[in-house]
Length: 387
Image 1 (cartoon, helix red, strand yellow):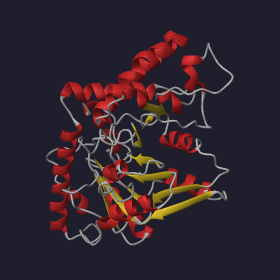
Image 2 (cartoon, rainbow, N blue to C red):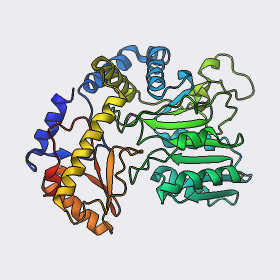
Image 3 (tube, one colour):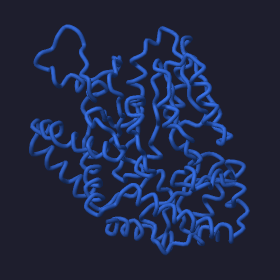
């Protein structure tokens, strides 16, 4: 299913590398071949149907996407899954439902992705915003420390990642913590580095949390399509709201801005739906082939174990267990490893060293990240990573 275009990628790199190994799959997952035809089909539908495409999108394509996401996350209500081009748009739309002229207390961690971290820093310039950041390390005590603060403080909003983007470590017990949250706290879980990598069951927390993720990482459908699940009985009225949010009332508008009790509450405005077609194509492909998140996770775990075996035998000065942030594969870990190289200069140098051997990876300041995917062959032993 990756044969044609992944092979073309390999061929395109052969001028620089011999048999390259793509280990930045936690950043950009390569797309299955079916996404090419899906993108073409979107063009045909959008161009040929013109304005009639909205009926197809809102009556068939979007509900199909929502249903697929709901099955993946064990969610009971697909129509409560909002979509947008990126998670930042959805999260800020949620934040806009608060009156920012009044005190707003936010609980989070010091390990959130740049998008939320930057927005939070900007919000903190307002005199009414107070942010508490719980240190993510040591990870062994994170759950207890975060929940203690959550239950003790008067927080209107809590936000945390299920898998941290820099380390690959899974936040211990996060879904259970969220299910026990105070009623007055809106709780957002950033699931981007977990969705379609780790098996996730949101059935018990579905009416407690907003869960965000998208198609760009592990689903392998490209950028441009993200989602946010919405708890039942949500009464928030986003200040940032688009015309899609009143699609059901366009012909019967009242004097007051109304919100439907479904995903349209957090809807924005016109967007490009090519990623929706690609995402549906990947879902359909995996369903036909019997590929589940559980099978993907099992495959990657086996690859990670082979990597650790090769690493232990190599005695590399930087790529070793002392520098590996976490390698407890049995108790919650994402699909990439992160190595603390001690400085940004050392991680950059190591990245160039790996690239010279045809191993493509990425880094976040002093951390070098190496990811795993189902398009890595079962015979790959990863020894080439270590020279």
